[in-house]
Image 1 (tube, helix red, strand yellow):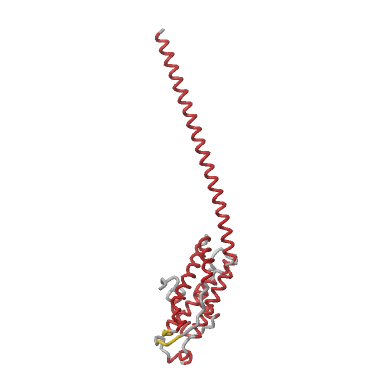
Image 2 (spheres, rainbow, N blue to C red; image 1 turned 90 degrees about the horizontal axis):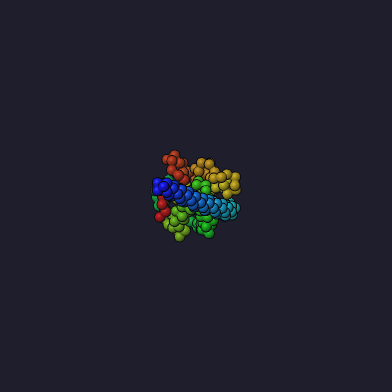
Length: 242
């Protein structure tokens, strides 16, 4: 009889243990399910927030891109006017008697250069911040660098300074490079291409020089020399501003 009671107690204890384990397992599963549900809700909330953020970012980019043609036109006008002004400042003796002129000889030069439209920088920086097109961001960054370097290098000419025609030619080429960089973004600005126009930048520089009516052999020869050396147009991709 004692044996039977002992076995019965053992059975009851075992059943209770199994029941407790089963309950614990179900409780744990409910907790896991609840946690998974919370994770799923969090994922959905993150997805909704990301979609909303992407939508708002896209709207801001469209707004910034809509004004880009006007911004680029202003930069091209500045570069064209600056190039023409520098070309007009070319020493008369060097124009009349180029064969007797030494490019390293220093002469007084004064040029009433236009001011770069710095009020446009904010719209360019906004596109750099918003766009996913890496080539567009890099091209805009190069425009900003080119403008900064060009303005710093040519500022002394406004008051008048002594320079040689070699350096003056480089300044003219840099103005053409600034024009070329800005002009290469028009197809993107007008939503015709997803990125920068693939045409060769040096080809655009020579086209800009033609537009500026720069036909001095010294300038064209220097531009061709830089091109043959594999140098990028201007200085935005080669040096840091002073």
